[in-house]
Image (cartoon, rainbow, N blue to C red):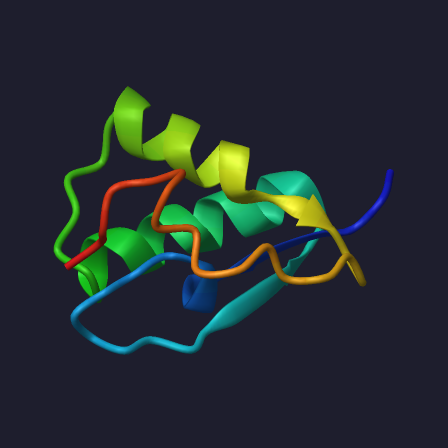
Length: 75
């Protein structure tokens, strides 16, 4: 299984968060959901999980820009 990465810099957020999470997909999903809820004030649910899952990329892939045109801003 390939390692995945989620990078908060790709989603506009009021916290100016720069966290990057890398690991196996299930590990990254758990950590990213916990982070989104505890730091960004998001509500855990299918929409949040789909948004996070869509933002995952293979480890080492280049950043996709700001992400503003793809996802709503996290708080």
